[in-house]
Image (cartoon, rainbow, N blue to C red; front, side):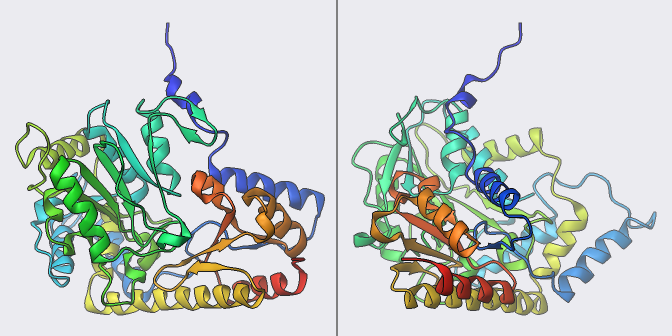
Length: 407
């Protein structure tokens, strides 16, 4: 008799973003014809740039000729793309071998799948609040117990609070895997080199592994802040880095990302290159490689012209972030982020719960945000606004909040 993976039953009711869609659709059914302005999910909205489109077209054209047609490619990614990504890191002062870089169909699946190369009894620590996939993938893998009072038993939560700049203290107990995200989703906080060094030293001392999500690194404009954990001494001995083409090149629907697994990571009782070989085995066993067409687009985005165009996209979204942040501040609301990240993290007024404020904002201003409690217990009492959107819609949403939100 077939039985199901009961760990799925442990997942808290409804994934965050489908629940947002459910409530938004219910509002629209009750209020037909009402325009809803969405500042919730971090989904890019602006067209792909000329250079990237041309790269994708080249990928298609190659498939139209017997001389350039390609079927399966390397599961680890096109060698040219891996070399181009290694060159990108080298410009940051980070030396990586192309064999340490694995191209994928996005950062989210890699963030979920990376835990599979670690033992089932690994103790996992996550920033709180955190992007849900870090937590949910480990719940599904069986590393937690029940969901009680907003937390999974067996998971180590590292609270990120306003008084500490939304960066966590070191775990107070032994952990094996540590999830960090900078720029952080959802808080918009960016870790300094000193803060990352603290975790790197801890991980090296305890032989823990840091899983570092750098998907929003292109939004860091402050030159003193690291865009990669590998800019910090010792990180190649204890950290895996996950990144994406989604948020700077606009590949949210095109799908392309990469994961760096250094050959120098030290784990208990294993050779330094073991994790690299395990991730290679996982990818070659369960993944046939990213689309050859899409990888041509990724290559184009890494050219000099492509980088300039992508930076223009980033600047566009960061202007949206400034508009949202300043608009909320004019209402007297307390906001964070939005400076080196495309997310604005707002304290709800008068002690309002996150989902209560979500409903209030939707009903009064017809604006969709993301409830902070959906990112973990420390997110309660906050909401997240996304800077991804058309400029006119962002400006309209801000005006609607200023005109209609009753505080």
